[in-house]
Length: 114
Length: 114
Figure 1 (cartoon, each protein chain N blue to C red):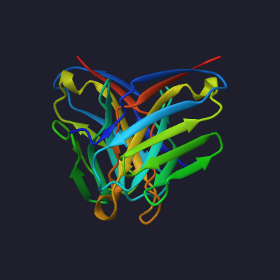
Figure 2 (cartoon, rainbow over the protein chains, first blue to last red):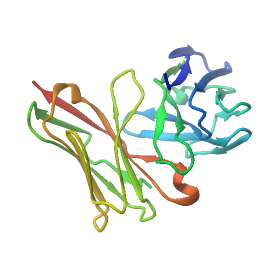
Figure 3 (spheres, rainbow over the protein chains, first blue to last red):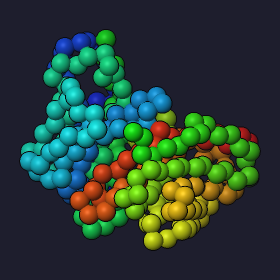
Figure 4 (cartoon, rainbow over the protein chains, first blue to last red):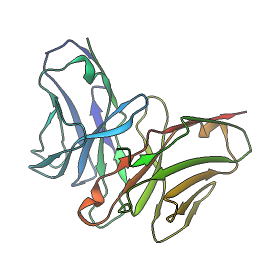
């Protein structure tokens, strides 16, 4: 089954404790992206990756890092989480270049930073 | 600067009636538009899309209309069913190098009452 898998689904942590949210896709997609969803703000892009070892900032990158060492994985790293990073996070991957720009989303990770 | 706007945070309709969700955009470089549906505790799922060269695209009960001159699109659901109750996000992308980035609206919560 084609899917985007995020882990963990739920996470409660404390300020300053480094964490990683993993994302994996099995569709051989080149493009992957991270979003956060906040009430009244919709989905905002954090970082994206056009391919292995190619990453770039989205609209709200402050406080986040990413890496793309393999095509299927695109982890989101919070080196020193703060309460304003409490949010619902989604990873997505895009259908191949030249095709329709349809992004497929994971089920989400709800993060609470205390 | 919000480039994709969904001005109605919520919409309530009766089962069997038509649901009309609206979306406005400001960036004239957008040429591909999508609607995503999101249930609680799940990631957004692709629903329907439209290219700027068309003014209508239909898929079963779902039809998207695009008015380029007004920079406005709408999603019509006929007939509405209780299972359609979800948050609907409008999204847009450009062409060429900007084709990969999706810009989302804030979403509209649709409630279909039995």
